[in-house]
Image 1 (cartoon, one colour):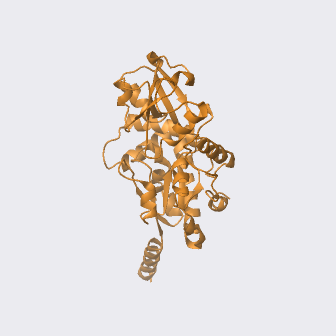
Image 2 (tube, rainbow, N blue to C red):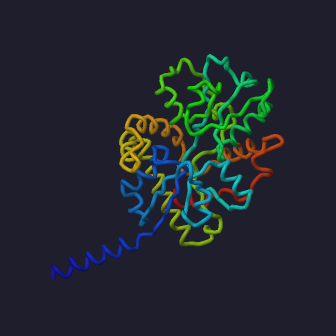
Image 3 (cartoon, one colour):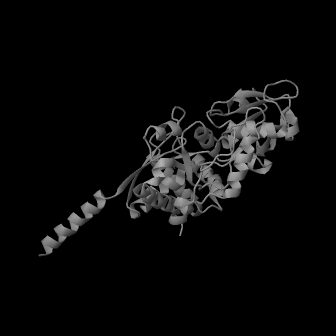
Length: 326
């Protein structure tokens, strides 16, 4: 009889395991502490507790999350709002279902020796800018400042910056694009003292746009089974994020365990996680409409070449977070 019960129990467990719903998440970039909450949720069993089997796909320089989700390769993806809204206006119906990042980590990092002390000193300088959708906040900021991005004494020369800090180290640019949690520290690690640098955080300049939100295709939200999966996914993910905020060093080690490239180091990931925790702090996962309105206003302020031509409709919803965060 005992044997029969244990077999039945094993059978029930196997059925429960098979019944887990699959969810595929496409990251915006490579495996690093920027995505710690998702790796923590997977490692700590938070997804499993919600009956989910989550596959996390790393991004990289050759991977466009918007193309992956458009092609059915992911259920949900991480992107910055400017890129998502630009894609939506071009016909890809992306919807933000949750916003784990409350603050922006984007900034310009400048060499003090170039004479840059304030935004007014950008004129006549060469500035390194990331493209592939990451240029939108910069272009909007320059438009807000009334500084042309076509060069000349009254404008700025835009240098298409790779995802590295070489233009600053080689003095090809007065300022480069950096994230508070990543490239800034690469500059420091290269031997430049913080005292020799001037930084301008987009958050402080009032032109921050929303980063690292969770996006799905609009049509999928009409499917009740999909909606239910996303409710559970967001709930478990935010549990992972809050755990990562409270245990940054251990969260960094979980990220390292998931880095199949071996490219990341313990020092860099722990430092990154400490900075990321500042950006997720204050978010319970629900998008703040005021942050969204600021983002849209910034993107519309692009002068003759705005990122989006009109205010979007239906680009975000509380449909998932209202249920996930009860």
